[in-house]
Image (cartoon, rainbow, N blue to C red):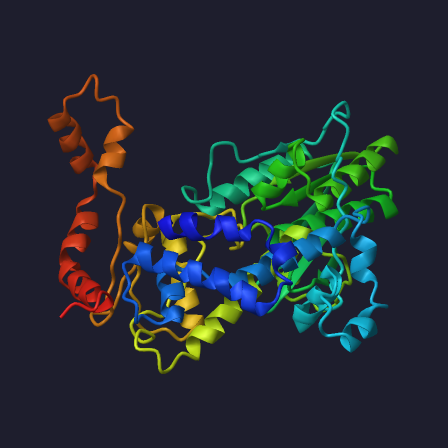
Amino acid sequence: MFASCLSKHHPDYGSVVYGSARPSYLKRLDYVHHQALRLCLGAFRTSPIPSLYAEAFEPSLSSRRDKLSLSYYFQILSNDKHPLCGTLLNGNNNRLFNARPSCIPHFGLCMRNILPDTFHGVKVHTNDFCGHPPWMENSISYINPFGNFTKSDSNNSVLISLFNQHRQFYQSYQPVFTDGSKSLNHVGCAFFTNGHIISHKLHSFTSVFSSEITAVCFALKYIDEHEIRKSILYTDSMSLLESLRSSSTHNPLIKEVKDFYRHLLSKGARILFSWVPSHAGITGNELADKCAKSATEFLTRPIVYADVRSAVNQWCHCQWQEKWNMETNNKLHVIKPIYALDARNHGDSPHEDDFDYPLMAEDVKFFMSSQSIPEAVIVGHSMGGRTAMHFHWSPKSPDMNIIEPIWDVLFRRDLHHLDLRTALQDSWCEKPPGYLQTLVDTMPRRVASTSVCSCWP
């Protein structure tokens, strides 16, 4: 974090402009960057540069310039009123700059030279930055027929019974179940209503959140085409419902759903939104989920800028990982192969309604299995450390967890009314016995793993 603060923000500023400078000038910045990393890490002068990047989890300045430039490129395309939008799409001067290599091409041509093949032909959803007027009332709200019953603390039979009672009360409303799905190589959306199932396969850059919104959008169009007067849209994405209810979101897909919802209201339709728990045995939701995962009919549709930016970040990270994997002669490569993961509902990872430490531990195990990683040193702080505590390793697998210090727990207490000794005893007693015993049992392996990673004798 300290290295990031010292060596990243100033070179990032204006990198879209000065990134087209000659390589000899850009290398001067690399020298400053490397010196800052060595000072922050306490590394030797002979430490390989790729190892400094991996140790600090800081990409090279050239990789970061490419990422920022590509992100800015697609951000311009997301605003059709941007003054540079026409320049980016104009390739008439390509032959002119190819004939004069000494001339620096404009930003659009530079981006086409580094644009990955997977990004060619990607259409970005244009965004209306003004959004809805503040005086336009946001009438979208949702109902929760399950009350205080949560999926993690309730049996599926209880949830199904509550849903059946809810359907008896709203039996005059036609149910429409929507769902979106995203896996490693497949993104899909689907909705189910009155025996009809409509499903579409989406672009691989589409996030699970966008697939959920797309399913709702197509469900509303189905309601309009079939002139359904009263209906309830069921979704298992609470984040989607909160975004629909919010008046501050700028997601163009959310705006599209809101506009179409107002259009249906003006025609006299009555539409309600409701949340249902996923994988709880509710028939409509299970069918929509199954069809979203198995959708085959590809739908050509623009992608929102947030999803494209996430794909750019992932591509740059994969390029960095490939370069690191090729460092076979690097003396530190065997010691420090790094994978940095975002927990679910954080960063670039998918957003799910189910969220607890065992599930996050299973996510990490799934990633290790997909990457054929039999053993690993797990390093986490705070929530990451608690996630690592839920691992059940084999005896040969090392594990190392950086746990949130107990002082953070104490500072949340009102120590004016409790003496320090009492506060410490209360905090210690709140820890489950198995939690602490696991920490003690794995301490020898933690020390051994730390000594190996730190090159101790």
